[in-house]
Image 1: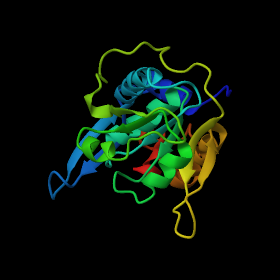
Image 2 (image 1 turned 60 degrees about the vertical axis):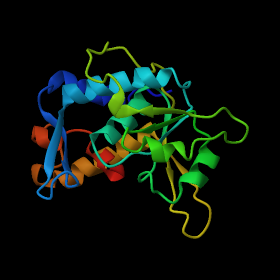
Image 3 (image 1 turned 135 degrees about the vertical axis):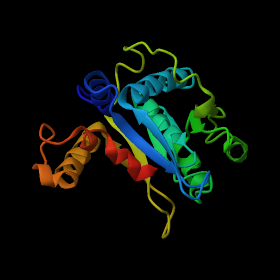
Length: 220
């Protein structure tokens, strides 16, 4: 169990900077010029908490939650929702990721997070792994994410293990590399130092646009 987590930081951002932009995704599939989709910190926190509430019905603390979804804000909500629910996020590059079968066998998830546009493809991978029950499939974009969320919702006893990042499998079977809450926070600290170097790398001296969980874009 950890005392400080990404969920705690997200809650803090939502409280201190509720209307500041947290993430912006540029969708070039809808338009060649790109369509901007944005979430503020308060919106992101609300959606994270509501996604976590849905995930609590699909598994227990420490269970694996595989994310198979297209690039976009729903992917970020899925990842943060898994962390907030106390489950272990397993991010994949998308529904066409060639590692899917191997990862599902190894991770044995209780839930697969996706979107309605990819649900049909994801359904083809859903089956029992290692004798365990068939994982639930949650279409994140169909959840009621914008309803007012209770501040205490989500897993209160979050495990130290936050996510499993699987290797490419180019030379052998993909292997899950464990990432802890402390790993994420350390990674975030390094990014803050480098990305905002012109401001001295100090969170207190950086502008609001430089603050936040920007590292999650690694998987988007």
